Amino acid sequence: MYAIVEIAGQQFKVEKNKKLYVNRLDQKEGDKVTFEKVLLVDDGKSPKVGLPTVSGAKVSATVLSHLKGDKVIIFKKKRRKGYQIERGFRHSYTQIQIEDIKA
Image (cartoon, rainbow, N blue to C red; front, side, top):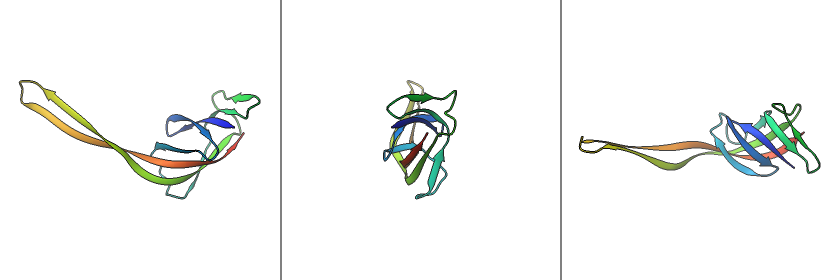
């Protein structure tokens, strides 16, 4: 059984006991989170497609940790002008584990 869920503005395919990284959530580590924007649920027999969401479907998950991704270097330069800038950026992620899918 799997579902397509919208989490923090992005869509993810989730299955029970699957771990995934999503954009940073406001919950603390160990908290339970429920996602109600379920776009599709497939139990192996017949998929339920929502218009735009499946009514009554919920996905519950547990927040495992908060972390940062790899550093991305942004380098800008204009030749013969003496202009160059180097900046770095690290994206914040939250690791969650899917506990249950209710259709």
